[in-house]
Image (cartoon, rainbow over all chains, first blue to last red; front, side, top):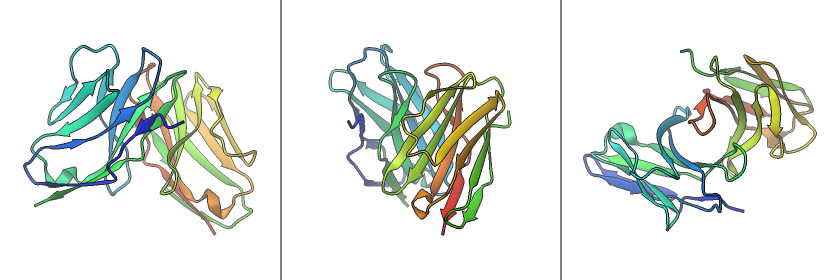
Length: 114
Length: 113
């Protein structure tokens, strides 16, 4: 069963604008973790941001923030003030629901336009 | 911190040959994961270890695949015999504590001709 869904295969954003990348998840476990990773064309996987299911506030890391809506089971990544270097694939991942497996979505390809 | 180290970076082999991929996790990390990434299937979890013990190998595609972790600083993923459909990027990742982020290596790009 699909646990993580990213419905946007590709997104474009103007440089310096904000962009939201969507992610929904499916779990019945009350304890889980949500993660976002960036994969540039060079191929490495870079951790961006984490949200725990019990966290009361949305996570933020610099220009990255996570719009966590627990009731809707969504964990959207918001990138503010986009830069050309933000062009990459972005993956949403969930830890769980059982064990320590990490399940990844299919990714969203973001292109920042100058 | 040297990060997760994978070798080789690229591997090209002929169908039927044995392939061994290697991984050195970050020192002190208790969890180690092997993933495979393809365009068609995305990132698939193959197996993960906790304290050198395999915990979940349900993602290993078939008996041709095997993974070992003889000690805390080394793991291998072996494919024998290899087939063209095994062509993919194989990532190793380690994790310090439960629910912390995974730290990925740079991957091994495997091509089986």
